[in-house]
Length: 156
Image (cartoon, rainbow, N blue to C red):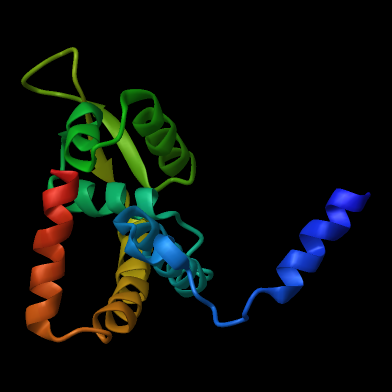
């Protein structure tokens, strides 16, 4: 018990200045904090939509590229095969997309939005516009462009 009270006594003497010490110089730490803030706002903005970011991304790309394969979706979104299959299965179970046979390659399944999927995507895009307005409102247009390019340098 003595060591626990010693730690608490030391903590009580620390200045409450919100300082992060050397953590403030760690890029990954700031990326994690930024991701958390963006994710929290996304979750709030999408509370009425009842879709995840990945599910919306799938609907969006299937809308833009009707007949796209599940494997191609995974490649474009940088999502592994098993996770992509689970996402597509969930979205399909909700009636938002259908699988079909490729006319070019019999081994390949195509994905197409249903009318319900189109409606869900329309609702999602409204929420995305609100979320993007909140996020981009913190920066100038030039800063947004720079930030996107800097983030691409990390994930591409």
